Length: 560
Image (cartoon, rainbow, N blue to C red; front, side):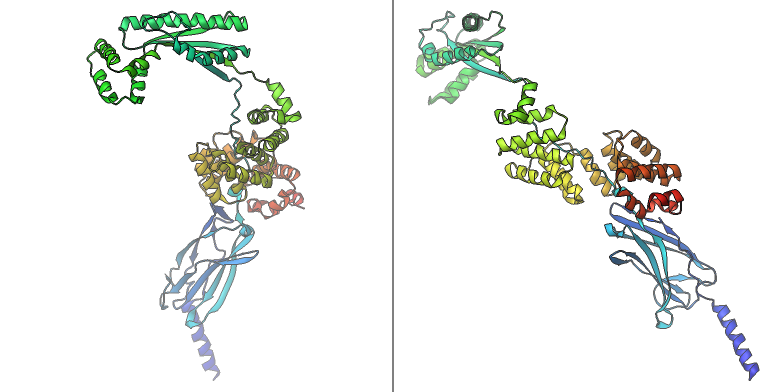
């Protein structure tokens, strides 16, 4: 009996030796590890090998990766492995030689997943039974550096519309008899024009500085070509003499620039008057005139029409004229006066002056106060609301900015500047889909949103596109971030070295130090980051960029 038991033990040992025991990878090799969020997606690959005689011929194994994080567990796609003689689906593992196994998956990132662990649950399904084999942690944490975009977007101001130099013009006409250039103020047309001439004199009497005077003189087109040119020359000279005399009389000014243009026959003016007239035969008259072979014949036909149609002569009479236009500089307050009044007596300024006044100072709080005054005094001005919002964005007052933008959009929907600024607030609220829509609307309205769209590209994982979009600015934090994610650590370091120092700049320099195994770069910059923004201490504790420094005494002391 004892010999029989011994024989059974030996036979069992031989059987087990021939079948082997299950040997899964230890450790599992995950790439990348830690995991990385790229454009809202986390992808990873597990590449390992089942060793020789490590997978029994009748074995069936289910691998079930899952991500465990604070607030939940995310099950990933399973993978089935089976021995050579096992029934069912799965990747066949040769008992004698073993086999490589490769697993890949991708999942959507959520902020709460930054602190997480990736596990694989191994279950044996041999014999139809589910037998737990192992539950192994294979990776820890998710790197989110690509999402650390800065608030460097370009807020857009609506144009103030203020002109530092405004030219105001007033015109009047002098009329002349047929084939004459002497001035006859008793001519009916000149009597009818007296009101305009008086208005021109009153304009000159305002005493505004005269920029220049333009005199344009014409003849009616029924006369001979040479005579018409002479008439327009002479009429221009008469009008110049007349307006110069009036200016000297009213202002005592003798050095006024008067530009004279002798236009010759006003054929276009005649045809326009003909086409606008009530003459029944106007189309016939027009065709006859246009069909003439040369100007002389055309002039003759116009003369012929004056005999037949009295209305034609009336049209011609008003073309024998000289038009005088006086151009003056509108009096303006100096920049110093506008700036002073914008804070002391804003109600004394026009809305354009107030919006302009805000551009005369670099102080954001003063700018905001001026725009608020513009809102108070001109509550229907969408530009004032938008510009107040733009300054609030620069100051970080997001709630107030949102209220101003809502009002601006109500007053004047679909303005590019408003759309751009709403896009910035959407991006800061991490609603990048809405941000992109706003930026596209702003771009359609003519606003340059290149830099702002770079933030959306960055979040979406288009690091090359983001780097290009940010390239218009040098020494810029977001440019450095894009360079870093494109693998250009030297370029990123150079960009940050000349950037204005801030907590986020120091923190990113610390990350670069971690990626380049530069301990002093990590410690020095992380200390500066925490000094600037204490919250970076807790951030560094969970940031897997620093996993290699977890046991470094200086690093641990910083995070105490």
